[in-house]
Amino acid sequence: MEYFLRRITTTRLWQGLVLRSVLTATFFLVVPVVQAAPTTAHAEGIAQSEEKVDVLHHVTDGNTLEFEPFGEIHLPTIKIGDFDISITRHVVMMWVASLVLLLLFVSIGNTYKKMKPTEAPKGLANLIEVMVDFVRIDIVKANIGHGYERFLPYLLTVFFFILTCNLLGLIPYAATATSNISVTFTLAVFTFVIVQFTMFKEHGLSGWLAHLTGGTPWFLWIIMIPVEFLSMFIKPFALMVRLFANMTAGHVVIVTLIGLIFVFKSWFVAPAAVAITLAMYGLELFVAFMQAYIFTMLSSLFIGMAAAHEEHH
Image (tube, rainbow, N blue to C red; front, side, top):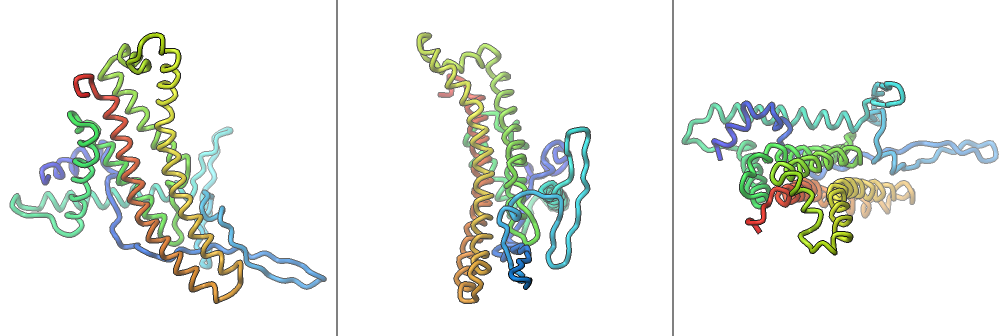
């Protein structure tokens, strides 16, 4: 295991493993910040201020980084013709996640370089080694089998990148990049391309076309070919929607529960709302790890199915 980590933290780091890392338990169970937008209602010439919790504003993307009540940072708007490639807060969070992963794994790689062969890793390096070993053996190798090493860089990257984005979304004033369907769509496309490329490489064009028949007699091809063709796109679609929906739904529930305090405008509601929110935060922490695991496991499974030969069944 030590030899493996020494390799992936040197030259291979810049060839696809830069994003492999994980945030530790520093930000566990932090109470989220609720964005409250004040409005003014005029009734018989008397202005009355009200507080309104905008749930959608909290979970969707935007062009500002809000640090209420300290102010906000407006992100640059960039357009090339009809294409809007502006920097948004979800883009910023992906940059932050990438930077965290880069710094963390470079630091751990340097730690391994300085270790003696008889030494064992300690602290954070030990935690990361356990997680890398779990992904390598229990997810990738278990689902792909022989030749799994080729896909390990991508799958480790996906696991730690998704996990880091999920955990960053639990920090006040931050945002969850994986609750943006564009992000989950891109990750799903990567898996789709790798699956199709693997199938072409292992079986050739004739083998790729043959898998559309599902191994059934020719008179069933009229049914099997459309089903198998659609399944190629349904699998990555399921990856995309599952990650997006789970990460969005959790934050919607948390903001809604906190919003009950402003809806009822009573301090009597606050203890129950905060208690349930903390419980949901614990669940969100579990979901952050679970969704990274599920996306990586299903990607490994799809790649393993594409690479499998008849003699392996």
